[in-house]
Structure formats: C-alpha cells, structure tokens
Image (cartoon, rainbow over all chains, first blue to last red; front, side):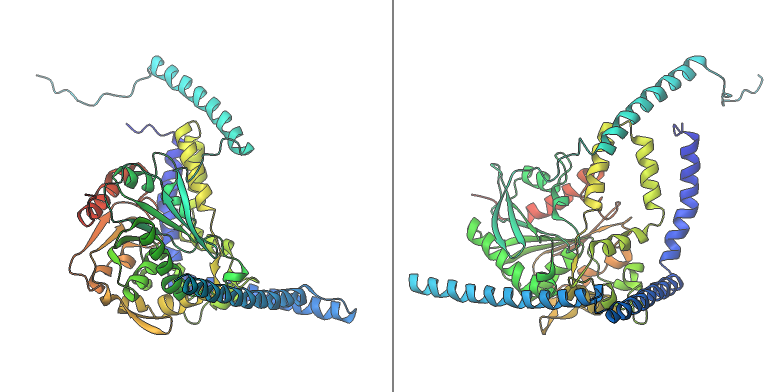
Length: 102
Length: 367
C-alpha cells in the first residue's frame, strides 16, 4: 500500500513528468546555445555598465572598481611569482642541507 | 457456487483513521522541533570524524593517514578527490563512511585534501597535481609505511588526475581504481556543452583571483537537475520528523554546498583538453608538455560506474578499461548515483564490499 500523503504523490508525479523533461532539455544543444547567449548578453551588459561608470568616475579622478580589480590582479600575480621563487629557494636550500648531512 | 471478488472495498476504519491522525500529530511536532534545530543551525552532525593524523602538508595540500590498529594489508590505499569538492565526503559520518569501512576491512587508508585554492594556486595546471603533488604524496606514503607500492583510488575528476599520474609515473602504483570518472566528455551534458567551441568562453568564468569561483561550480551542478533543489526541500519536509534523515540531510547538504574554487589554469586545460577535444577518449593527453598515454597504465585496474549518475552519466564513464594497457582490468556498474557510489546504506551493500574485495585480492597481506 502506498503510504505517501496525497500532496507527496502529486509532487512526485509532477517531478516525474516535469523534472525528467527539464533534465533532458538542459542536455540539449539548443539549451546550451540559448544559455550561453544569455550569459554572453549578461557579460556584455555588465561590461558596458562598468565602462560607463569607469568613465564617469575617471572624470572626477576617482578610481573605479575595475581599476582596483586590475591592480589586485597585478598584485596577485606578483604574489604568485614571489611564492614560487621562495618555494624554489627553499627546495634548493633543503637539497643543500641534505647533501651536507650526507 | 456464487463468484466472489478477492478485492476488498475500501472501508472507513475509525481505528485506522485515529492511528493516522495520531501519527501525523506526532510527526508534525517532530517536524517543528527539527525545523527549529535546522533554522538555528545547532545540532549539525560532525563530519569527517574518523581519527586521523596529518602526516604531510605541501602548499595547501594535506595528506591524512587514518588511525587503525587492525591493519591487515601492507599495501596502503590513497584516495584522490576531485578539485572542486571537499575530501571529507570519503569520511562523511560515522556509519556512513568509505574510510571507516576500509579501515574495518584492514586497509591502511590515506586521503589527500587539496585545500581551498586562492590566488596563489591560480597557475596550478593539471600537471601540478599529476607530476608534482601526487608523486610527492606517494613518496611520503611509501616512506611513512615502508611499503613498496600503493593502491590509488580516484573519485570523479580525482580519477582523471589519478589516471594521468599513473600513466606518467607507473611506478610505484600497484593498483588503480577510478570511481565515477569521466572518459567521454561528449556524453557529459551541460557541464561540457556550455563551454563548447562557440559557446561560453571559459576565460569569462574565471574570477578576479584567477580561479573559477565556487558559486559557478555550484550553479553548474544545480543546472544538471533543474528541479533537484525543490525535490530536496520536499523530501526534507516529508522526512523532517526523522532524526536519522535530518542528520544525513544536513551532512549531505553541507558537503554539497561546500564547493571550492577550480584553479584557473587547470580549469582551462580541462575545458580545452577534455571538454572540447575529448582527448581522454583518444587515450593520449598532452600534460606537462609531453603526451601521456593511458595505454601505459599496466597495473590492475578497476573502474566503478554509477548507473544513475547524473553528473558523470554511464555513457560518459564507460570504456575507460578499454583504454588502459592493463591485462587485469574490470568495470563495475552499480545502481547508484554520483555520490551514492560510496555514501549511503545502498553503497554499504552494493559498492563497498566488491570494492574492498577487489583491493584485498590485489594487496599484499601483512606477514
């Protein structure tokens, strides 16, 4: 005997129909085309808004969020290079210690 | 003799009606109590509780060895996690843990936790993991245990990392196991479809720190089951009275929402090499500036595939055994989903026993 409540049976029936179909839809090429088109549209819209606010802020000699982001990316990149260099140095030092002990 | 019907017509049974009303009242009271606990955030189940030692750290990576006084095999087992999820899924909760099960079966279990990548890891390529991190971790395990070789078990994209590692560095891997590991990315659905040539430029998914944000990864997983979240809430309401269910629910949702950023360079390589060119299926992948051939994997190989896996569908995971060069190779198909392969009651009956039997057959016993 099905012990599920009637609301649960209704939901399961709906999910069986709609959920399964939606899962098939998101796996289609048409969905991927549409979704990537929407994503691209959003990206362009954001880029345009950023460009507009950057120009406006630059008029007043105020740095925009994108300037800060660009600066942060540069600092991050520098930080990465420093980290790699210090890691390499440490390894060379460790190898030297090993040789001395040997 | 007159014909009688075996079907009994539905009759109103006052006793049954009263029993149901009483049950619903009790359940609603328990739902209310558990709902408050959930909203308050108290009573969160402990995750990854099996006692362990961090035996080595390197960059953000940690290597854990689980404590055990019943090790019966000298061949250690190393579990390799994907780059976008946390590795405590291997040891989710007491009684529902792959690690705990393997320890009971007498294995010496190690887990790699990649840590949470930040801007310092944005340049990590697939080669960073397969040619630097994994060989170092294997070396540490061999030195710690005194073993000559190990069994490597990779889950999901961790399986891809394990494959690439073993193909490039066959020694000292005694056995290789992959679980829910993709090989044919054309069958992967939206995860690879969305970043196919002419669609979303993968560079645009990379955040300011040089990695793909965890929120993007989470949306990608959610997209695969559009009604999944609603179904989860419906299941939650339906079972909120059940304390065991609540613990499992909280454990799984905590892990499911605990995605981590995908290191930018590795993500771009993943899209170009696996997603767009489907090179894993061809058997040869350029990693770290040289071709890595899956045919160079000659150790015993086991591929475990979930029949109901919606993240790495069966069609996308089958055929891996045909690409490796091992003579002792097999594919185990289990009726379960992506995580259900090794988490949950069904896994304890369907996947873990054959998995551990296979490792036992291919491991060296302690004298």
